[in-house]
Length: 278
Image (cartoon, rainbow, N blue to C red; front, side, top):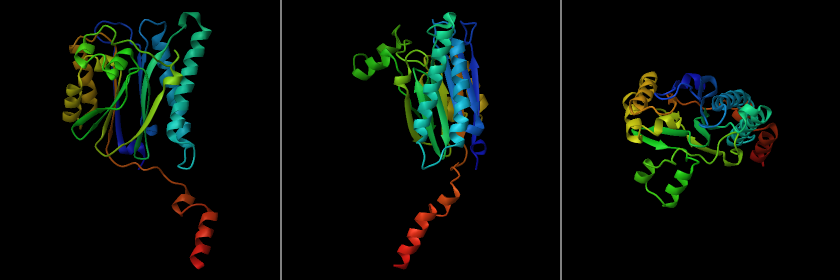
């Protein structure tokens, strides 16, 4: 079964209540199993341009990467890292070529669903969650001073929620983020829901409420996406809000090569045959 037939994907984005410009970019590509959200860095020139370059570059590269992938070739996680590194370079070079766009950047998170697995890549504080059963799990770690302080035990979650520094990020594509790219692999099981979101959602809507919306509206993903954005707006909507959702409806194993289905290469089959006759 193809990934398009096995998963439903939707997205929604909103400028929020206080901003007129939406510097987020969001893309779902069902035939590639791709979800991606990019958040242009606030306070920097052309954040919306950086976000657009990021999602367009990632989409353009993921398609051939999957078409050329084989179980015996370069691991898909390494390919995804290379895709994000290339997006980082495109944003950086565009900023260097246009003084008005100097130092632009974007935080990015993406999910590639392939072969009953999910490959997750991210830089910055754009996040990926997975709802499995009725439990929501955060699958990424923010690249931010606030997260570093929380991990070190210097502050607790309650103090962090009221900190003015919680929106600062240490890395973003186009702004020295290539070395910080994190990629991980996890399983994708029937019934799983993956959420990719900008911080305009998770800054204002806590995990319990996100979990409740996804669990109760799992059969209506468009409504779930709309509801998440609406709750963030109702909580103040001080930032752009973007969500991309995918629900796994059936297994989607990758097609194997003819030689793999027949038990390996010709040489391997000959050795097996001779070994059986000994």
